[in-house]
Length: 525
Picture 1 (cartoon, rainbow, N blue to C red):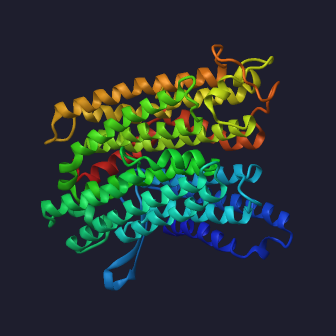
Picture 2: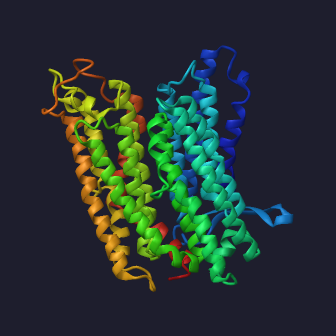
């Protein structure tokens, strides 16, 4: 299985390199572009099949053990090793990354994002494959410096996807994205170097096995703080989130899907994989502050969405979903801050649930914007015609899917958004020993308030966009029915909807993988 994992990483890297040879795809620009998009779909499809093979060959009886491992020397002078492996924490994220990358590539074959001048399908494909390399590597590497390199690889392709194929305001949004994340990464690198130099190894499995042994309390606090700040920017944690709404609003559909579905998970994954097992004393000291910021983020994100959803606010639907991610990722950070197996398992489950649901939401919003020419909520709510009100009357299947994704996002029991948030709050009800339970009960109460606010703004969005708002004067730009779900859209969206139901009805599918691995990372607690 180690050969499968290596192929999983090499295949998109070689595919990205192949796009640097345009003549390999034909001399005619039109044919070259079509072949490039098909090539990207084929490569990401092969990667998805490899990830499924990896999951099928995974020893589910021992999910806490690193499997499919490769460990060879890379930079002997620094004792940096090419160390790869997967366990019950990283395997679901690898499969999710492969799935979303394939669906984005498939979707883009029929709906390549617009950009200034003539769009370049070859460049788009190369950037998408390079982005996939960085995302997959982040969840597969087991060396601190390799983790940092993989963490940074994603920045450049995502920057160009936003800056080259994004919408209005793409330049400032891309610049803010790269500046925030690079500054956060610089601080994180200092923390990784401190941790590795003081421990005498950069091997993440060795650091986790030691569980902080040999590291002073001060070293652990400094390392956890520096690494945590870099991870918090990517998560994104309030108040380090301000790059996210602009990036999501400007990004093309594929960029928004991967940004929300995978890139945000890289930050929270780093907390579980690096900070908690390697610097447990530092994590324990900083956990209440992380919990407080997470709880504030939950309420803040929901209030921001409510403000955007109200009539007359001229709120952008993509921007609203971006702010909703601040709240949903707040639940993930709150679960991590409890330092309990229950809370951390809830955080990992919420990671996957959010990736599936928000990926679907951004696909749907992109389709709505293509049809109406806008994502402005006031315009969408006022677009009533003789054929019926808004989406339910004009494109009923599209409207039904949007309503389904919205109720999944608000945490309806039986869907993927429910279990992660529930377990994160339950972890707050009984935090780890040494943490102040009354403080965490306040965090739990704020998180509960956040779930009510989430239901309020998402149901408002469904009412206004899917049903239309009779209180608003009709402002249609077109009349009659619009195109409903197209075959290529159904192919890209159906797996996400089906997995949202499957994860909600069968949570043990994910929790059975993560629970033993989390206990091992927490030192058997």
